[in-house]
Length: 405
Image (cartoon, rainbow, N blue to C red; front, side, top):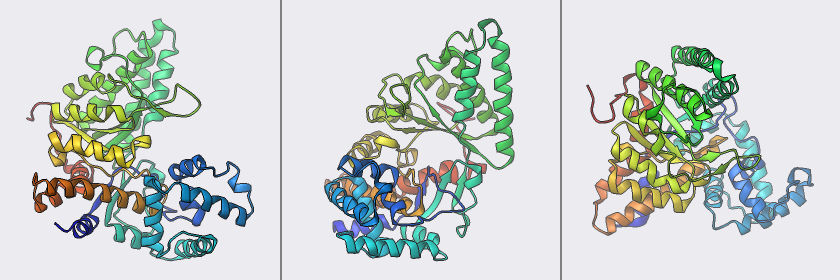
């Protein structure tokens, strides 16, 4: 098989990007620095010596500091994405100060160009992107691409804390009050067209099948009580739940990936009890197998893309191997760009497609699958699996853990 030709076929496949931070009124990067200072790449630049006070530097100083650090990151996945963004979208290779000045001009021109966002998604064949903020769902000049479902972790974690900090003898009443408030909020979102919800979730230290209320003695009890309420609502309204897992905020002032061998296991009670499609997105590398095992055991559990520090070429390759071996290709999808602008949505999905192509081409060479099978699997991973979950949610099939009725 011609590997370059195969990779070109993969790059032409449709994409359903199931998590972005795109803002509908400002989809495109306003300048060169909005691209190269994207959160994840900025970490790598600063790890290579890019100064913390880069915004205070004179332009030439900043460019020189950027170029020095940029060259040192060339082995990273984010560097590959940046190179592809400028090569594919701007016909530009970043090599020296002059090329950066050209990049400054080209990105400013693209921001002012009508239809740039449409050109970019067309080049990447990005059919849908998910946003979680209702105010961001109307994409200027890009009708039909945005899929909206709300992020509720602020309400969920806040409600659990308020219950827990209530005097123990009054917690049951407080819990019912908080439950009513959350369900009213979810109902309003559902009336406004939200047929899925997303929440981050810290590790639950108790098994969810044991408690749908109970004594509410611990914080976990309070959280489990609310999770059962949310899952019951989701089952009634036939909506999907997307759990973002693996990041914890208890170790320092920001979040960090934390492996926990009971993180997924303790959610099994929810997966078994409710006829809800659960989509698991994981940020901790050590839990990559755990989400696959859950999806293998439960018919209503699906595995999403790679989140936060889990978005790396090596973890993608390892995760694809784990999923390929035991999951139907429609049980897992790979695209979660976490992008802040349409250029990064393009760049990260190009990287994902390269990794998919590299992985599946090896399986073809090993004679494990043929060329047509590889393209079908890639199509499922990049588009169809997520589209089945979120693209036509009004008609989405919701199945039980071990059967449907």
